[in-house]
Length: 178
Image (cartoon, rainbow, N blue to C red; front, top):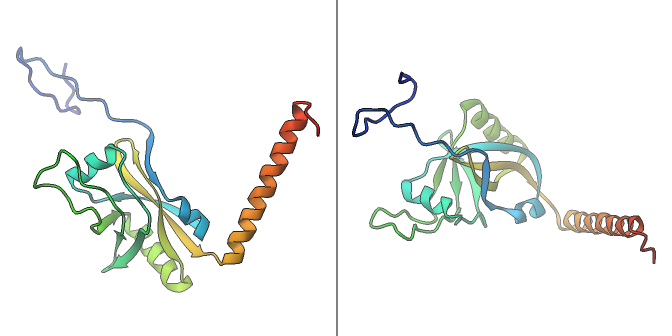
């Protein structure tokens, strides 16, 4: 018996063909490491993106860059500016513009919350990662506050101290005391 929930195509004998399995899990395409260095990330949101077919194919090939990208509000909607998705190599005249503005897909409550926080607190929205989640292209948006240069130096010093402690503890565990 063929289920009414699954669309099936009739084969040559008239039997149903099983649907293609959907991609599972999370596959990261691009990440913005500099954003975590330049900004203090206060909160993160997952948003979908309105993309064209060649953009999705280019992303599936693992080609994207989030350098200098940011999200901005316009007419009550959120848009991603400056994200670079190179043209699809097998694309023809249907290819997309690499740095076009892309609409972010979020629930109205999340959009209003993000817009309110950016207006009242002077925070900014920075893309942290682009990835595929169960076959859908998503972007992780971070609500961020800019760091001062001394904050960055403190973070680097703290990270170096933690790395040194871990290295010494690892050597002691192996019996390689200095």
